[in-house]
Structure formats: C-alpha cells, structure tokens
Image 1: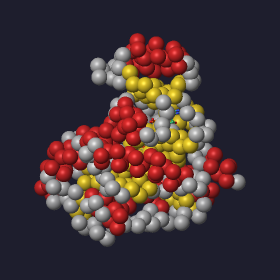
Image 2: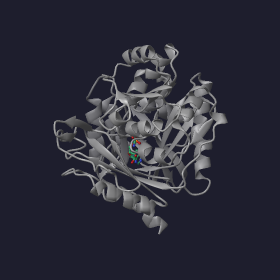
Image 3: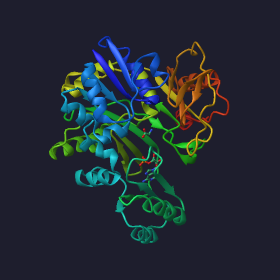
Image 4: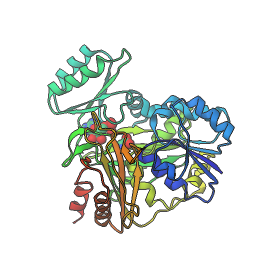
Length: 417
Ligand code: AMP
Ligand code: GLY
C-alpha cells in the first residue's frame, strides 16, 4: 500500500518511523518531510496547498494519508482528499474546528456539559479590558485562533492580562479572544483515536509547555514529554466518559463525524479533570513519546479509523516507559537561530530514538532550520530509566548552545520515589 505522511516536524518523523514498520506499506511518501523523514520516505515538495496535494495523491495512487499538523486539517485537507475518494486519517474541517477556534471549542464544551474553565469570548478591546477589571488576576487570556501553542497568556497580574488582550485584539479585524478562569493542578494529555463512534484512548502522557526548568519562561509548542503519565485509578475512564464521549457523540448529533486523533489537554484540578484545550491531531512532542510504546500497527489502526471499524481493533502496548527531550535552537521561541551545525551519532545509544524537526541538510551536514530542532526519546522499563536514556541521547548529539530542559519528568519521578 502507498502511504503518505503530511508534515515536517518531530511528530511526523515519529509517525513515519512507525508507519515504515508496517508490513502493509509498499511505498512511503512525506509532504514536505524533513531530513530525518527522508531516510524513511520519499519527500515531496509541498507549500501547504491542500487541493494540490490531494490532486498529487490521486495521480500517484496514494491509498492512505496520515496528517500530522493542525494547519492543513483546519484548511480542509481531509475534505479535499475525501472528495476524491482518498482515504485520510484526520478529521474534516468542521470537526477540526475543535482546535481551529478556541471560542467554538468552549461553546461545544458548554453545550455538551464537558468540564472546563469558565470563560467569556471577546472581539472588542474595550469590552475585554473592562471585563478583566471585574475578574482581576490570575486569569488566562487565549488567542482563539491557531497560534502554534504560543497564543496563551497565564497572567499573574491584571496589567499582563490587559496587555495580552490588547495585543491580540489590536491585530486582524476578525481577532477573537477567550478569557478564562485560572485553574491549577498537574497537566495531562489524553489522546484518543476515534472513527466517530468507537473511542480508544492512547496511553496518557505529559507535555512540558514552558521553555525553562521549573516550568518557567515563555510558553512553547512543548519542550518534552513523558509516557505513560501515572493517572490515579479510574481517572482515564472518567476522562473518556465525561470528556471524549460527550465530544464525539455531541458532534455526531450535530452531523459531524470525527475521524482521527482527538487531543485533550487537561488539568487535574481538585474538582476533577477539566479541559484546557482540544486539538485535532497527535500532540508534538507527546506523539514522539507515545508511538514508540504502541505495539499495534499504525497503518492498521488508521485504516480501522477511516473505514469505521475501530471496534474490531485492540490497541496493544509495550510494557515500557518513554521520555522525550526536545532540543531547540538558541533564540526559540521568538527568534530561533537558523543555520547552526548539529550532528547525530552514527549509532544512537541503546534504546534511544532521534526524531528530527527543524533541521535541513547543508553542505557540511545537518543544520538548524527551525525552533524545535530535534526530539530525543529514551525508552526503559520505568520512567527513571527512560529519562536516563533520553539524556544520554541528548549528550551524544553535537549541537552547541542547544536549548533543552534538564527537568523533563522530574516531578513525576520525584512523586513516585
Ligand atoms: P492551551 O493551548 O489552551 O492548552 O494552553 C497552553 C497552556 O496554558 C496549558 O498547557 C496550560 O499550561 C496553560 N493554561 C491554559 N489554560 C489554563 C487555565 N485555564 N488555567 C491555568 N493554566 C492554563
Ligand atoms: N504539545 C502540545 C501540542 O501539541 O499542542
């Protein structure tokens, strides 16, 4: 079977790595891919136009497409492929709105009774500022549209909150913000696959969103992940029943059949799990930590989703833990340095995987070409061992001035000790 993976980040490298292991695959393509993916797949130049990619896939006879990032999903890549009768793993545009608009997602959660922070939506700066006067801080201000994980301000002062609201709402005319109640507790990511009827959760994981150790510094797309995150007994079932089922069933009742991955970012508050955000795809870097633990063939899984037979498939897992450490270019997230040299060991250390993201091939080897450059994943019989291996993997990379967190997974390991 000819398979296409769409995207060019660490998440998509991990997806390619997993897809390439499937005996069902006869040819693997990536659009646009990256140098790491090029070792596994034929990379096709692509500028982001979803219609053109659908046309190419149709001509090439691509039999299954898996989509990594949110932008093409929100652009309607699934609709474009389905219109040509092509199989695609990823939700249609209307369903991808759970990520494309935070205001839309918050309205859905209210309609379907899904636990989340209380919120208000604003388009007008003055309205938002006077509302903030009534809430005070701490308070959370979110850009409603796609912002690569960087559109959220957790404001500790009223001044900060007002600044964030004014910054977004003084932008494009259609700008929209969500102002929501500040929640506290550990964060967890629960991904699930669904064919619009059956829902199967993947192993819970935890991202690290802040740039610096101790959860300080600016928000990023994610600096590292661990899997599985040790949820208390019953919590995963609670999340499936109170969050994922109402979402999928509620959408279906409104005529939207969700097929693909649902990402629920949750805060485990004293009042139970509450949704911080929904995404319409695998998390990055959660995906890099989760897929190496999945025993089930990802191509079989994607086909079961696309063909509405997910109830037939049982997900199986390796009894291991994993840890992913993201190495970013100096200057990330605001202004990452491009063109810095880096090199990976010819033979990765034991139980270490390298997934490339913002890299390109220069005349003398790999160079940085984006913010998050590399995901280093360690596997082990427990999280402590997985972390040791991940950091051994980091130490084996030659990449001067790389930014990475030294404390991935530390809270969980400390709590387990
Ligand atoms: P989001 O993109 O909505 O998940 O927000 C990014 C990050 O901001 C989350 O991972 C949390 O760390 C933080 N965050 C979002 N919403 C809240 C909230 N209501 N209370 C506290 N922190 C939040
Ligand atoms: N790691 C956060 C995200 O993928 O949105």
